[in-house]
Length: 195
Image 1 (cartoon, helix red, strand yellow):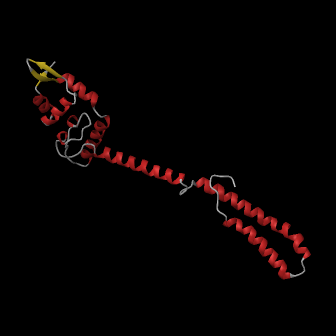
Image 2: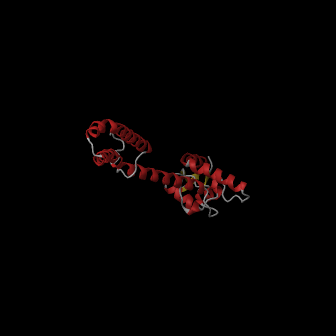
Image 3: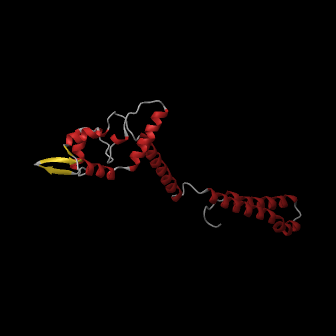
């Protein structure tokens, strides 16, 4: 069991001493009282830090490191120097660049996707948007009704027209029946309901 001062522990980890004090005050570091002096238990503190690590940050640090290597940029941050407990304070940033920029970009994209999805669901609930399947079903139903109605015009008009002798009256009767049949197209569609 190695015991070191808080300042020495911070130096070993490559941290700013203020950051080590922050971890101590949060209870992450394991402190031992040795002769009236508080010292850091290195092994126990390292284990506690590992247990408190945000797994996404370690993964993203590896991804960012690989990207920097691929693009020929120097390593700006060692994975061990990454903030172990998920803090975003400046004391964990040694070089001034974020080791988890890609993580934040992915999180922002995910939040944007969720917001757009929520907006779509809301617009669907208030009737501003309708599902494509509902439109297709309603339109197919309406077209079938109009087609059947047009095909029934001769059967409905034949007895009436047969009794008429005036060509203008026959034309008026046909126009009236066709207009009534075609007005079905102008009626509003009912989406998601049976017509």
